Length: 341
Image 1 (spheres, rainbow, N blue to C red):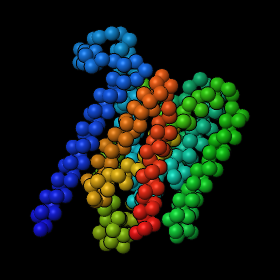
Image 2: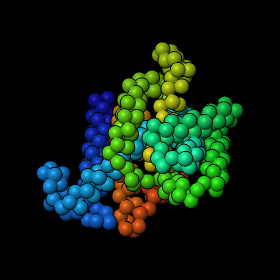
Image 3: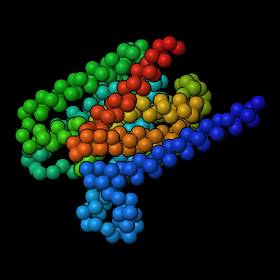
Image 4: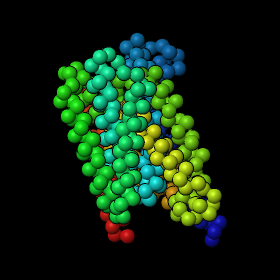
């Protein structure tokens, strides 16, 4: 019986991973091919492997679509991992960077920095944006942690997180009111949430931030697994709870900050993807969930970005709008299911 259950479990893991890999490859190909300019498969093969083909198509693929795809993969995975860490930290399936107001805090600080610096200079470095977003994420996370000590009900914690998000959004709107017209346009486009306008330089910075943080999360799989079974169990297993909780907060905020700095606030990916992955796998073991969660976030964001670009082409929707359409029903389902249980 135990061998049969083990075989069933491994088969489930294999099917989930195979499906994600297939979707991953298909969505990359579709994102390369489709858009306001449709590139033929023959030209795509020439451009990718021979570096030949039409000069316009070459520029579209190598300078626009491939960096955008890479950013969707990296930032989508970062969002999903951030959500998984927050759900583990608060032991709440509804916890996520957007719902808890962490994304809004990052957005507020980035908006303040962009308005301040762009009024004097013409550009803002990636490092400054990430630092500002991280500071905003930590500020919001600090308020959430203070509230979590006083509030016992998970529903009240979520409500408080939403309120923090509203406050940060209000401060952002006030700052935009006093910004120059040119800065308002930049802030508006960024605040919608999008992978557009990404360059290979941006991708390299994203990778330098997200990949080490993701590896750190994976290496923490054993203490995360122990923590999921309760703080007392984790202590008995030799986990330094204070240090562990600090690491969870820092890593989740860092991953969320990187996404907000480059793509703006993207909603519900951090909640929906970890829940879907755990539902498909029928397990929450970090050693298994962490890499598949990252891939699931990448697939989810690639799919949302494809819909955002092609549904009403040449008009482009925000990725956050599309992710909300798919993410909100999942969040409602999780809340209702938890209430029934």
